[in-house]
Structures are given as C-alpha cells and as structure tokens.
Image 1 (cartoon, rainbow, N blue to C red):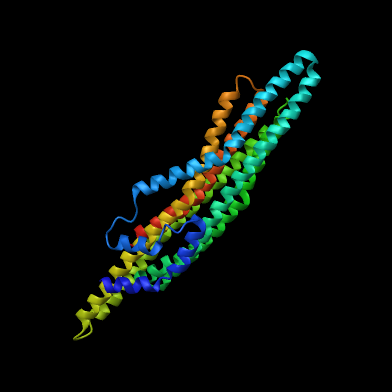
Image 2: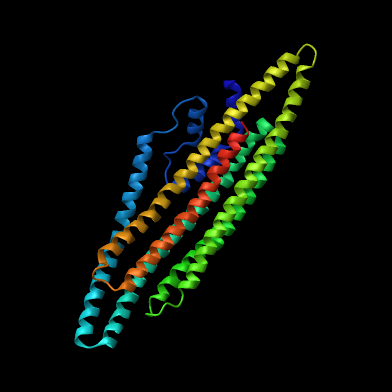
Length: 351
C-alpha cells in the first residue's frame, strides 16, 4: 500500500504547486509535499498555534502599515469641523461651505487612496487563488484519474476551468469595479447637500449582491449534480474491470487484489491532496480578507469618534467606505469559498 501511494505521489508534479505557493504566500514555510505526506500517514498536518500566530501577525502588520492613514482621516475630519464652524461664525454661510468643500476634498482624497489600495488587495487575492487552483487542478485531477479513470478526471478538470473563468468574469471584471463605482457614487452624493445618486448606488449594490449569489448558487448546484453522477458512472466502470480481472484463471485473485489496492491508495492520496489544496486556498485568502475587514472596523471606529464634532457628510463618506468594504469582503469571500467548497464536494463525492 505504501509503495503504491509513493508511486502515485511521484506522478504528481508538486514542484509547480510549491512554486506558486511560495509566490502567493510570500513564504516557503508551507511545504505541499510534506503536508500531503503527513495526511497520508495519519499525522497532524499543521500546528494550530502557528496558524493563529500567522493570522495575528497579518492583522498586526496591516494596522501598523495603515495607521498613518487612519490618523490623517481623524485629524482632517476634526480640523475640518473646527474650520467650518469658525468660518460660519465669522464670515457667513458661503465661507463655511467653501471651507467644508476644501476639507471634504482633502478627506476624500485620503480615503480614496486607501480604498484603491484595498481594492487592489481584493483583485490580487482572487488572482492568486485562480493561479493556484489552475496549477493545483492538474495534480488533483490526476489523482482522480488514478481512482475513477480519465473520463472523470477530465470532466472535473474542465468544469473547474469553466468555474475559474466564470468567477473571474463575474467577480474581478464585474463585481469589484461595480463596488468601486458604488463607493464613488456615495462619495459624490455628499458634495451637495441634496441627495442625487443614492438610488443608483443602491441599485448597483443590489445587482452586485444578486449577481454573486446567483453565480455561487448555479456553480454549486452544477457541482453537486456532477459530483453525484460522474463518480457513480466511473465506479461502475471500475467495478466491471475488477470483476473481469478476478475472473482470469489462476491469477484472478491477485489481479483483483492489486486493482483494489491501487484504487484505495489513489483515493487516499486524492483526499490528502484535496485537503492540502483547501488549506492553501484558505491561507491565501484569510489575511487579505482580514485586512479588508479590519479596515471596515477601523472606519466604523473613526466614524464613531468624530461623529459628535464632524459634519454629517463626512460621516456619510465613512459609511460609504464601510458599506463598500463589506461588499468587497463578500465578493472575495464568495470567490474563495467557491473553490474550497468545490474541492471539498469533489473529495467527499469521490470517496
């Protein structure tokens, strides 16, 4: 059994997978082959303490890197409130409005730069996931070929490629740019005291949320149906082959035993590779998602701090950023979870 497992592992080219892991995680601490080997041997593949440390370090680094932007936003909002109130007392409404617009444009510029950086993190994260899944799929569906034949492996592989293209188009090409447009529409509505773009912004928000839910539901539905049909057909084919081998006079029992052992070893390696792939996707996504979510929480804290002294339009500006970041978390999370659930479903339904 061990020799067969080792032979199957040698057929899987893990060097390309390890290379993309090192590039996406910016670290060589995650060894894909060792991770799969530990799972096959029944050992604990990772340390819970190290995982928590990895996550906490990522959150800390994010706060340290972005703390200047947070401070600038608070200072600008408070100074803007002071300038606007003094101008209103001394010179009248026109001077106060001019002062507010100057402060607002400065505040908007800082917030827009911060939001653009976060948006690039979202796009980069999904691109890393796509790059990894593209390389990982070759190894993973090779394992399925060992257990269920080339037809099953090709069907799942082709569906994964379709899923990546659909996710790339819906999330990267449509959803994330639409979220940025939603953010700028909300910001533009605050320049004037009259509400001009809120209805359009809400329409975009509803379209994005509906599009993401529809994509996720359709892909998962097709995945489940495919997972129910393809493995059964392949299993029936394998059963026929094993029975034909066992009917050979003299060596039938040996052929049947070897075939069954190869299939069991293939399933073991396939499940181990699937678990390792899920772990990598989670590691790729967890820090960027936490980074976006930490931004959202910090903006909410800033909004709560400056609300008593700042103009309501500044608060609305921060609320727009919070809503847009929440949508980004949902979009990136949907893309990541789609691959995690797909790999898990395929592993469970091809057991």
